[in-house]
Length: 304
Ligand SMILES: Nc1ncnc2c1ncn2[C@@H]1O[C@H](COP(=O)(O)OP(=O)(O)OP(=O)(O)O)[C@@H](O)[C@H]1O
Image (tube, rainbow, N blue to C red; front, side, top):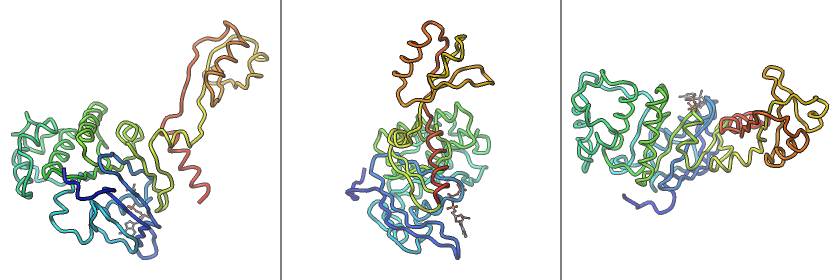
């Protein structure tokens, strides 16, 4: 793998993009380390596509600096482009070609591509080399997209919502494939609206809201920073007068008692000490990353 970029694989400083009156990026700072999977999140219209377009060299920022693999993408030449792999959400392919023909055509664009069999086996399509592209399933198509993006041995991969529209099985298969690429040292920047995907794949998360990065860190750090409590719930036939002083509330729909807490061990101890054996079906729910993300969006919108 080429390591001519020494520190950041992606380094964006104070990037601004204006479309007439619309400020799509409003001073973005973002650093991505080599060998990591970074997820770029944000609600619709937050500026993700605009930022990724700048990183891929398709758009020039109004001001600020963008460096990808140490180079300004807007001025970069074909040698730089060969080091970048891009998987768009909806690639247009001439559907009359077979998988093998597509792979051969794509290999032709690069000076030192992977062998065709390496590409097919990397994405689990070896058995489908002779199938016409229009006969592939959605999951197989996405795997082909990924294989084509790998053809030029890229140092950096951009994935736009890689598993949108896939069934749960195909989605998991693609996650496994992407985890494998990460362990081989590929640097990946992905956009996603799927928080399970982000949890499964991302080393780092950057949240873009209103054209600015408003939160960054690992999933664990962001969960910690959110301060969202866990919920302990249980069933009990004890007199409510013994339960409500614990701070528990009854969910009228399920009949379960619920307690929000930062310290689940202490809460469970207090509940069992107060109610003895009259505590059944205890369940513990920790906040999901989706809860964390939605809370973050709510807070930022409330303050913007
Ligand atoms: N070519 C353009 N001309 C004018 N405004 C634009 C243009 N492209 C994007 N915008 C605006 O810039 C803002 C950011 O758009 P962008 O497509 O980058 O967001 P996004 O985060 O990718 O959204 P989504 O998740 O919906 O794809 C939006 O307000 C959008 O309407």
